[in-house]
Image 1 (cartoon, rainbow, N blue to C red):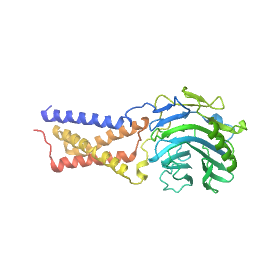
Image 2: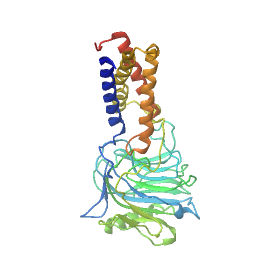
Image 3: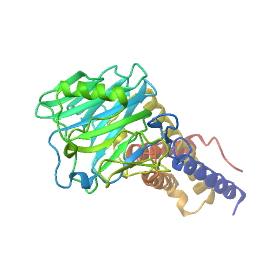
Image 4: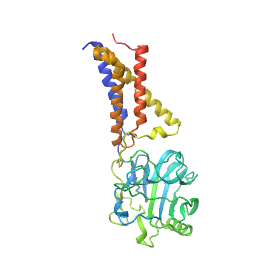
Length: 367
């Protein structure tokens, strides 16, 4: 092998290893589940890379899927300015389009079905604006049933839609409950969960006020009718890895490592997102990160001076595309990473730019 070919091969291998390192490492630098049971008081603290899960809810809804229900929770956010999608509660049956999700966006709380995070689809939702501007514990109740959907904060009605009814999804192969993250482990919430209850009835305003007072007085949820209680977690066990629900078949636990419960391959998230400063930065990184790879792959092919050199530009772009495809497909198994078709397109475009830089400028050439 000529010296120039050996040098190009060494640089190419180095650049591929760099791309694999940055493409396959978990965000946050580790796969450890960054959620902990509190030692000094009740609750689970989520630090942005954590989750708590109930893996099998199917037994809970095997004989019924309540048309009316109430979801109560006691939470303390860590920040009043969380950007993007930060889920507190997710009930998921295998499809994001059907999921029931309660999430924080900046200082607001949103409850809805589906994945219309940026509200482009105009799917109905209830919203408590400015609720998290004060960093303290809040009692939140989402009630859906015969009178539509209502959202209460600290016993007070903050939003209602009579023509909107939320649904607990139950059409997919599996039914899961996730706290503090999405089922793909890509969107972590920051704060403390003190309690959660799901009840198969739509409480009225007076009942919600009484339940709020009961919680504020002793950190307990009312269970006057056990037959209606689908899920009850007061989170009053601080030294346990698992917390049993009211039924023996359900348990809420904090896994040792983050778990990707649903894998998504080459998703279209980036194609529908609104432009923002973080998105512009991410776009530039995806493009510019593959410019050097396009240069070194093309330089390696040209240095061989073989038959492949005639089609070197397309071979180099194809090699970069295949490398990016391998990274994006692998990211489906990596918590806090998203397998994105948009990233694949941007990476390939960056590689093409690199090839053209070398062809037109030839600024780097080995003797």
